[in-house]
Length: 231
Image (cartoon, rainbow, N blue to C red; front, top):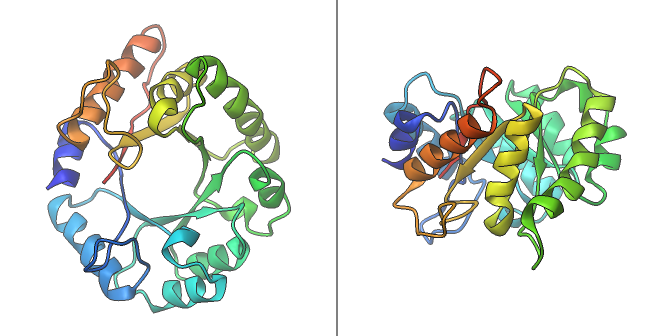
C-alpha cells in the first residue's frame, strides 16, 4: 500500500483523498470510512487526514452534512479558507473531535482565516501554493509563501505551519520550508516528478527525495521537518 511505503520511507502522517467507485474525490461517509480504516490498518498509530475541498462537494451545507455523517473519523481534515462555508465545515469537524488543518492559499484565504472564530482552534496552518508560472521557481515560491507564513505567525504565533507546493512549485516549497524551519509534505497529489525531473515510482520515493533535500538544506540545523505523504 502506498501509505505504508510512504511511512516506511519517513513520512510522519498521511493525507488522503477518499474516492468513490468512479475514482472521484468524495466526502461520502462510506468512502471516507473505507480509506481511513485502510490507512489505519496499514499504518497503525500514524495520524491520517482527509480533504474537505469544495471540488469533492461544492455545496457548503452538503459538506457539513457529510462531516456529521462520517462513521470512521480521521485524525484531521484540511479546510480551505478561501472556499465558501469554511467556518461551518471547521465547526463541524471540531464538534466531532477532528483536527482542522487551515488551508491558506494566496488571495483571500489569510484574511478570511483571520476573521474566523475557529482560527485559534486549528491543528496547524497549511500554506499551499499552486503550480509555478514560467519563471524562477524559488523566487516565485518565496514571494508567494513568505507573506502567508508571516501572516500566520503574526496571528497565531504558536500554531505549526506546513508549507507545500504543487507541480512546478513542489521542490522549491520543500526547500523553503526547510530554510524556515517549517513542516512540509509531498506526494503524488502534488507531483509525479522527482527533483531532477524523472518520474517517481510512488509516494515513498518522493518522501525520500524530500527528506534528502531537507537534510541538505538544513544540515546545520536540527531537527529536520518530517514530510507528510499525499496519496
